[in-house]
Image (cartoon, rainbow, N blue to C red; front, side, top):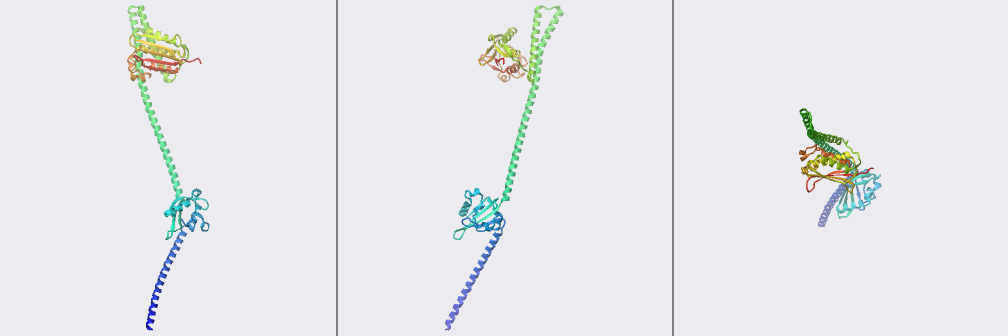
Length: 435
C-alpha cells in the first residue's frame, strides 16, 4: 500500500514537471508571438506613417490591398477610394495601350523584382515622374502571395534635370553660335587679309608697271625726238654752210620728219587709249564700213614703208560689216606692223580676210618671225609686257589695246603657232547689222 502511494507521488511529480516545462514553452512562444505581433504592429505603423514614399501591397491580381499616408499624399487617393482597385489606374494611357502594368508584374514574378522610372497619374489627372519598385512576395512554399510596391515622387528632380538639359541645350546652342561667329570672324579676317595682300600685290604691280611704263615710254619717245632733233640740226648746219639744201636731201629729211611725227602721234594715241581703258572710258561707235577696203589700204601703206619684207593679202573685193573704222584700223595696223617688225629681212607677211559661215569676220595676220617664247605666251596680251620681245622696242601695249578693242566689238583675238614657224594672230568679230 505504501509502495503504491510512493509510486503515485512519483508519477504525479513527473507530470507536474512536464506541465511546468510545457507552461514555459507556451509562455516562451506567447512571448515570441507577442514580440512578433509588436514588431508587425510597429512595421505597419512605420509604413503607414511614411509620407515621402507610397508603400502599399498588391494582391496576386494587381489590386491594391493596403495604403499608406505617403501613397495618399503622392497619388491623391484616400485608402477607402483605392483599396480593391487595380493599380493600372496610376498609369498614363500610352502605357495602358500596350499593357505595361501587367508586364511589370510578370517581370517581378519571374525575377523577384522590377524597377522603373516613368510618368504616373494622380487622382486629379496630373502627371508626376515616379521611381517604382515592385517586389514579388512568396510564402515558405514558394506560392505567390502578392506584391509590395514602393513609389517615390521624383518630379522635382525630373524638372530640375529637364531645366539642366534645357540650359545645356541653350548653352550648347550658344557655344555653337559663338563658335560659328568666331569661325565667320576668322573667315572674314582671312578674306580681309587675302584682300589686303592682293591689294598690296596689285599696288606693287601697279608701281612696277608705272616705273616700267615710264622707262619704256621715255625710251620710245626719246627715239623719234632725238631723230627729229638730229635732222633739224643737220638741216640748220647745211643752211648755215651752203645757204640752201638740195631737193633730194630735203625730201629725205621731210620723210624722216613725217615718219617720226607719225610715230610720236601713234605713241601719244596709245598712251591716251591706256588711260581710257583704265578709267573705263574707251568706247566704240559702230557704223557700216567696207572692211576689205580698210584692210587693203592698211596693207598698201605698210608696203610703201618697207622694202625689206613682202606682204601678201588675200581678201574679197568687198566685205561690209558694222565696225568702228578708226578703232578697227588701229587693231589691223598694230598686227601688220608687229608682223613686219618681228619678221626677218626678206620675210613674208600674210594677211587673210574672210567672212565665215558663222557670220564672223575673220582676219589672220601671220609672220615668219622668231615666234613667241613659251613662257611669254600666256602674258603676251598684258599691258606693258614685252618678255623676250623687249629687244625689238615698243611700249608693250599694242596687243593689250588691240584685244580690248576686239572684245568691245563682241569678238576675240587668238594666238596660233603654225607648223612652218612664225606667229599667227587671228581676229574674229561679228559682221553686225544696222539694227
